[in-house]
Length: 272
Image: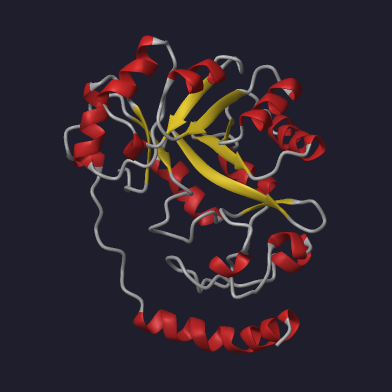
């Protein structure tokens, strides 16, 4: 069966599937809140991982609006390009992971993408939901203290310039954070803008990564928590490299980092 035929069948089934999902959906279980576990009076800066996903599917506007309402330090998104070179929010290029549609975002125009329905995530049957553009995401943070954090999936210099322009058009040059696993991509962004804050996504901290991040200027590490220990974390501290760890989803892990002097963490936990 062709991709077009598959999508036609899916489109016919979406109302029924979403209706069944709504009937059998369970409320999200109550999650741990750091503010209820002794952190309320301490400086802890939390990033909402792909938004507050207990309220809406990841990388959707309501998930970020909730992050701003709750006063998160920052909120992280992922962006990919459509067929007509528009940046939209998604962690994966394969849209079938989150949407009732087969194919990649690069196969469809923005107009087409924003007509597709979500198939999972809290309140995914909300008819008002759509795949947001980068610009719509940034608009959520205008006038707030919460920092938009953008992970870019792509490294064409012209496409990267569009991201930086969207940030500066909203006066967010000092508010936004750009993050990436791709060092060369971060270097390209630094060549476009010498002030915007960059976070280098890595696994385990080592001397090679430290030497790399120092070439960027005004850059942090964003290391994978599970791949690090007190020794590797201390290496970053001793070298004067600031860190925000992902993904920290228990008070025990948060306390471990806090006691080492790390106060920036990315989490799926609800922050009160």
